[in-house]
Image (tube, rainbow, N blue to C red; front, side, top):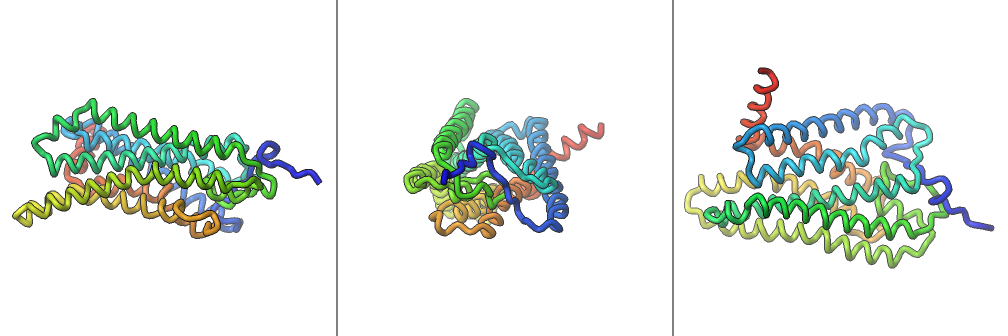
Length: 310
């Protein structure tokens, strides 16, 4: 009997977060609110930074770009999920699935490189304050941003090209709310062992690089801060890093749980919860984390509010 290739015929069905009809509308309301809060919060961060000249520094340059990437990151997956929650078909074409996967991976990786760039910025500011303006000049910051985007998109392109060569004939139901790598690989009737090895190796290199950069930066920062004689000086230095460390812990914690395990250990329910953490919850929390514990951002937001009201 001839095997039907769903990838070229009917695409896929995105099962979503739950197949229970009673949960569809409540989930739609919850995630719509979370998405709107994410977009509004990150737009406010961007506007506050661009409207206040005192925030035109490398740290806030990277933060504004991180906020923009967070908007793009959630927009890749959440609107489609919201449509599917109110739809009976929940279909996505094979090409649409690959496009969603491409931009999801690209924006996620760009996020990780921007977090690494922010760690480098803190390293230079705390460990080499007298050379800060020379090292973190606008040209270098722009090159770091362009490098982050270029590496991320090349990595994403490789992943999608590998995925496009697979055949999908056993099932066309993706047990997830978007086209993520692991649940799509689960459906393939091709031999995915070589693809998994390439994906795991290349992903480890791409994701581990910014993570190790963050780790190295904070080890240097800790050593430098511990040499500061006064407790007030130590607290002031650490307080400038607390928001960034919180975001790093949320982002890398959930990503490590989802992606750095063999395909055989993939769990639909647990991985969907972890994925929601870094695709929806973390981008939504980022504006609050960076603004509530940051005097400069609070001042910038107040200035933006006054401009709007005047």
